[in-house]
Image 1 (cartoon, rainbow, N blue to C red):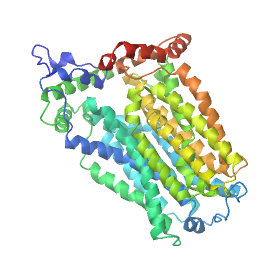
Image 2: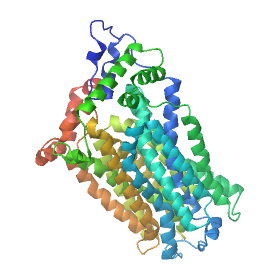
Image 3: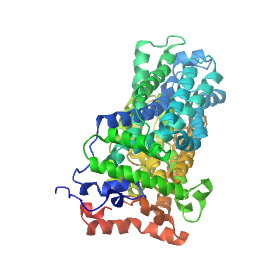
Image 4: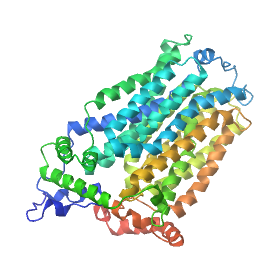
Length: 537
């Protein structure tokens, strides 16, 4: 149906100060129709997504490096002894602790800076904050690549982690505020896709260098780690041509510049819709001035249950145990008589491809439902994989090892289609607009802090009597408990307008739990009664 021409209604009357997304509900009423996606906005959003690529690459690059002979020789660590299977020699505790620090201090750095990133970007702008993150990243990456001692390498990991804590908090906001309303969700997934592609590229790059340079003393691992500087340079060069977001410009009082930037982002077409978006941004800025909010407001009666969900979801995301394999899989596979480099590469391919399914599942199936399904399947696959390790001698029966790897790929698919994206989406959407930045900052801190716990304890656990099977059982139990927690304590947020989100949580606790328990049944009835688009708000 052709868009209706609206003559008598003023643009200002058609916008809402409650949510930027509300423009999507009225843009079809304008003669010019939906906004187009210009090259400028695509370029800017891809630039923001490179931050995700940096994150994925830098977090995973040492997965393979830690097992390399040239790396261990340079840092005076004992080489991996021959043999595999349950009786294979393991790294001594002091080595496991050093490896834990190399991998673990990266998310620790992220955790230290993430809570402040939102406040910094609100004060000086998204664009300048991204530049600060980039400059700190170059420092950390340079220290890592040129490290001549274990302490220097760990310091580089900590500093680089601090930069990525800023980038990971600000880049999704940067992308969201530049995107047209009806494309905000799709463009927002670019960050998650960049993250998974970064992990995949780190595996490919390590294999290329290992095949071409081999174990050349002292510099093979440096070439592998140094690629992060090239990726960072690519983002920095692209960032030169990107704008500050119109929303921050309007909030900072640069109204004329905000209007000019938005018109450049949206192009000459859909002029009426762009004017409406400008009016909405200005109205929202005024509304925010009237309702100031601080950290203490996250724990008021009206939103404390939203805070409970926002802070719990990142913890549960990490308790899937995914970072056990994102940072240490090559060593785990090698110790199980398998080709660690090849299987890690395949795992990252699976992770990257499976992430595309989340583009449909989060909105098509629903956040709560897909998380419950994925948690159940993760629990099942981890238990079966543990039984394989306990009952099959992989040195005598290689097929059992590949069955184990196949189970881990299924586990990775379950994570990528549910917990991967929703661990970041849900904490930002459960809060009312006035508290979203501060709430998301605390949630990001939780994500990185528990990531540090998982990553730091992995080498210690692998080289203890627990072994990989014991660690998997711990994470399986966590997922077993997660299913009823989600059922009772998390509402379904699919298709809930942002302005109505606060009402989902502003209830007495008992009533809140009862509503959540019947949530899935109630929403299924609504979808059955209202076909396709009529069921959506």
